[in-house]
Image (cartoon, rainbow, N blue to C red; front, side, top):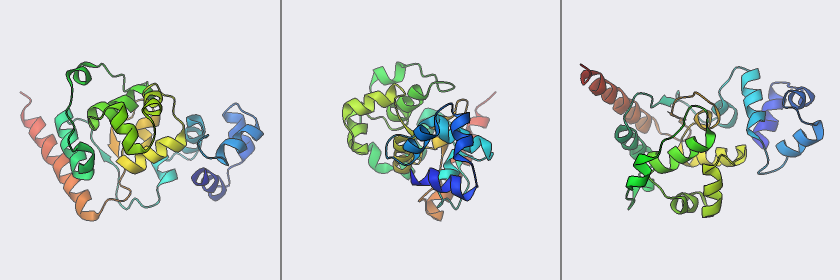
Amino acid sequence: MKQIIQYIEDHNISEEEVAQAAHMSLRNLRRQIHSKNRTQVRIVLLLADKQNQSIDSIFFDEMNNQPISLEGLTINQIQDIIKLVHPELFMGVTRSKKIKDYDYNLETDMGDRMRFIREVVFSLSQTEFGKYMEVSRNTSKYWDEGQINVDKIFKISQSTNISMDFIIRDHYPLTLQTQGMSEALYLAVMTSCVLYRLRNAGSVK
């Protein structure tokens, strides 16, 4: 995809070196990065780690503000923050008991992180999330199982502002990337996060 190709060119990174590190042939690497809907997660992880950068910084060049960490906030607080950014994703949605009781492994399971985003952060069914992302329910189901490539993760991050680093990286906190956020919205989100953290700290005995 064009962001990866541009990143490799801008940083004078050898495609041969990337292919070797990813344990794939040069031909396979080129086929992935030059084709739509094929790029594997390990390729962008390698590139980001090689340059000591975030994955978001490879794909988004319109982030005028720092990413916003939602670590330490409750689920209800996270939803309130997300409603500020994407109110359209909460219209007419009722959260079920089944969603509340699911045990998510956010540390090391990308499928669970995808399911967490869909079910907890946005309270959407597979059908509803698929409709929002303009894919089928079956595709949304595959995402819940971790069967998703970088191209689709990029689209999800574009549409929801959930950080690509959170989706892809293990042991990464829930974070919002700020592409497309106005300065007023960014300040509103940051202010809400600070107030929630102060409230949470005050409730600890």
